[in-house]
Length: 264
Image 1 (cartoon, one colour):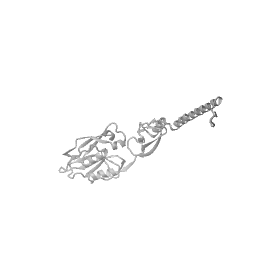
Image 2: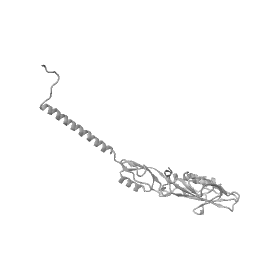
Image 3: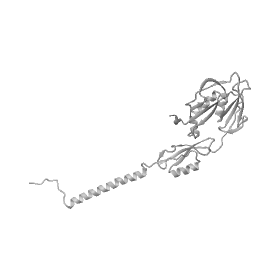
């Protein structure tokens, strides 16, 4: 019987040669496969993360050393004027505790070291609301509104004070300084009411209460630390409580504020 053409059985040493070469090729392939995966993982640092330190409140030198020790880099993106803790980090992005890869740039905003001066305007004769607007436009804050019932005209500024003493128009003070106003109070026009400012941000709440001719005291919860957090803090309680009953102009309203995230 004739054998089929085109097929030849591999036997003997040829069989071992073929199997051996295939085995070697498989081993080389596996070495290359797993080796390239390890190299790629090493290059990309797959799965390796670092925790971002808290740079807020630290000087630039302190923050840079902390960043170097933690394996990240700092990038100063801006500076702002804030009276407290000058020359320190005001805020950062990503936030402390975030997970990032090694050598990640952490963006920080610094508080300027220098002092910025502004000129005090002449507020005498202004209405209270006009005076408040003018102070805000100059980068100054309203301190206490002191009502003087010896003057028959209500809500006209009689005197402007800085640190308990009269300050003259044209004098220079540090930006964000508080200016107290002495205002006339008529016995026929001396009442206001207390609006509800709960749920509002602090700056908005203070402005609204001042427009009702009330003095404001702010108390922040312990977790409110930076100027940005204070600006965004939300009122969760006020004393006295909101009321439509008449009260005398100039009484104190105490606001209790906390981080907006705490409201959710």
